[in-house]
Length: 408
Image 1: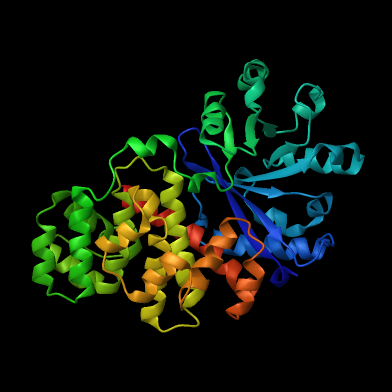
Image 2: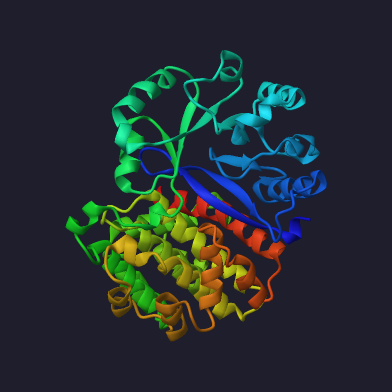
């Protein structure tokens, strides 16, 4: 059943380190293969989280890669997912079965992507080539020249090459040069070597944002907030743009900064500022890192909403969001905390993953890092796998919308 499995994700990046998709996998309590009914339940759940009854697919242009066994083709819920956004990863050995091969042909004809795993790129016959949209490859830095020549032929086709087991940024750059998209595992959490030569610390825009956050935290008068906002035209524009976005459903646009702050409220304003603090970084961070921070913040918050008072849940958002601020700012976490005044329990979670908030943050991290700790952490917090999965997938949707608004 769906409620016995944790959904884990891994980002797929293009050459610019932008997230163009995710692979979802299921972390099971046992090693028994999932039945058709269990696979169908999982797919129904994914469809419920990612498809709005009126607006449709809520992850924009993002692709969703699903590791596939032949039994999944029998799951009716697969047809609930939009074919242009779904890529089914299947092992080459499965295609030796005639029934599986016919099912793949049918799905490909309906527009679903097919990613081939475990195939020798030099020995794929034309029949198989005509069925696939993606093929997994393994980068070999020791034989880069030969691989570059081999992959050049695929560049001329419509088949996208997807690299796995990319362990260093040097390997990532090699993949980018070859035109490969890349599943990066934990690599995006590792600073690139050139970051050591880039400016560290808080820039001018972030200084203003931190001043506003401190005023909000102290419940300062709106006039004081407005005075700080007026010193940064770009920040004022972003606030007005944000509050006039479709999500607020306002009948007429807000023109006044004072009115914007009044309408938004202090808690949502603090949340928006924390997102903006990350996106205002000039230290050369990758877009995937910013998105991961936003997902982590929302994920941690949603895990805590049913269990903690409202203020604690909002603090969890900040803890999750700020858990990557040291990488985004290229400074140690201790220095970040010396600059930003945060509640003690938030600081404790950021430094040691302990205290009241620490386990929630750790659980959000476990689901993005494919950690075996997801089950034990959820159990210690008395959160069901289904509730963890719902918080996880809805956080991906939320982050897509917030990141787009913050960058616009």
